[in-house]
Image 1 (cartoon, rainbow, N blue to C red):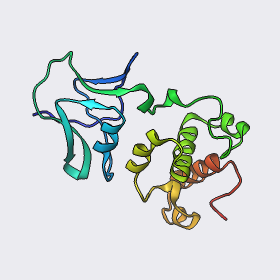
Image 2 (image 1 turned 180 degrees about the vertical axis):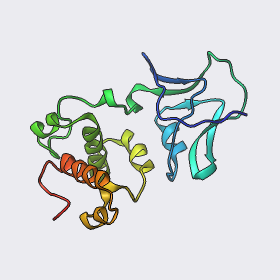
Image 3 (image 1 turned 30 degrees about the vertical axis):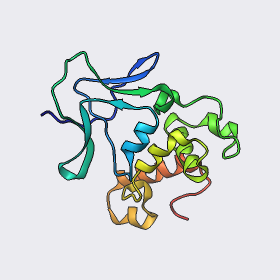
Length: 175
């Protein structure tokens, strides 16, 4: 039995995205990711959810399959990827269109997920929101004092720079 975890490997098709051989779907903890996936029309035959060493969740092949077999099929409307983030603002009640257009794709993605978490207006996004970690311990989330405690200038600069980029100068780590 072979096992692996990854972040991408989507192969676009008219019906959606098929994840093929040597690909396993990455998943973090969620109350019922399989129910959400099945309810959304995601199909898999030979794969099942598995917890790997280090408490990493992903999918594992439970039987052999041909190299040309589609192992996971995801309807296009259930796919959330960087090129599915629209240029036009889909959440005008949440952020202004000028702010939306000025942001990189990853900020737009985060905004859509935060909006989903607050409003529950787009049910297909709920599985992604529920799979997100509940707490973070990364430099971006540290206070100015915590960054200072590292005594490592590059991480201090990067943490402050990321904070300013996301919050567009409206706040700074010093405040």
